[in-house]
Image 1: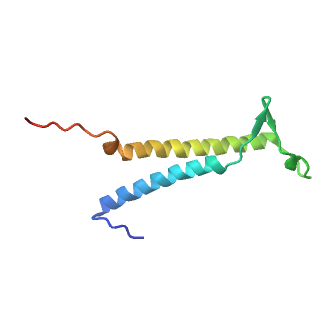
Image 2 (image 1 turned 135 degrees about the vertical axis):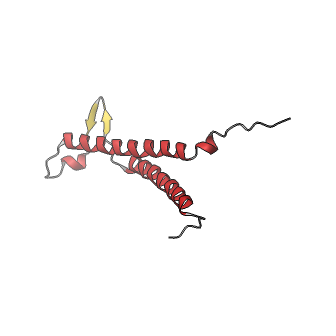
Image 3 (image 1 turned 120 degrees about the vertical axis):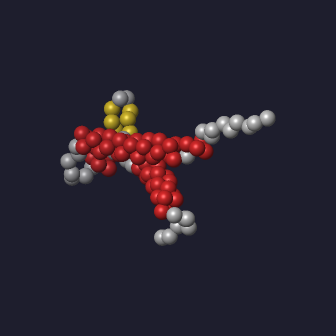
Amino acid sequence: MELPVKNKRNARHVWLGLLLWTGLAAGLLVQAFGPHLKIQNNKFVIPPSLLSGEKEVHPDEMVARERRMQALSGILTLGSGLGLGFYYRQILFPRATLKGD
């Protein structure tokens, strides 16, 4: 895919922005569509569909997987958010221009 840019430096700049936006979207998607453990009375609630099967249920593995998904989501979202803040720093925090009278 060719992007209309004037030189290689601008092309890298465009790709960096796309990469940061993609990372942010990936972090939000992991958070939105990842499995969420239900908690009632300070205890995890295991879905009945898991209990009725023949497979053995390992709550520690379920909790570990949930923590990994939360960590991945946090790293992607926070890292990309900070990166986007730095990427758009000139737009977010414009320098005051001094006008001569």
